[in-house]
Image (cartoon, one colour):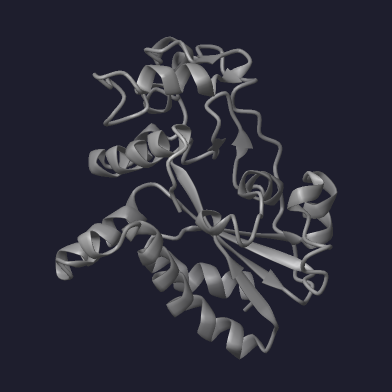
Length: 245
């Protein structure tokens, strides 16, 4: 069994069902210089990206919080803390068994490890860039999240990447009409317009992004309402310049 297959087998039970790999050289070739690995971590030759499609990962998080009632309030960023604990508990033994040198990086630890997960996910075939400002997956639509990446000092077989152009082939584009701020258009997501709208006293996007909700892809895999509200709060904090990790 390959390392990627082992990751898929072990991580799926935690709702981490999107796993893909690519060479570090391929990643470095397509990202801006500030995100390149070769200057900071020249020893690593491959990357494995770990993510979730649909709401099972959130359901696991919610169940963990129910079993540990103080966990949510005790941690400033409980979902991030849960993410690191789950991934490291499952991935570390697999990597030790494979006898490779490795490093785990997370999107919410960007200051320490500035890896572009948007580039990484697209190059690995886990989604294509969209008008919404997020990756869209052929099956799960915009209801995906990239949770971590593993840097490896060995070469592994890259994941096949199929051509996918979700917004270019979408005729209806219901996301554009659904956005109450008119912040989604042919040129993409207008962040300042979105921020201004969401910063009003009455935030009609507090429980969901209406454009994302109405995307034609992956509607059967929409996140639970409480998950969307959690992410909407974090997104607003980030847009307003408040610290999130």
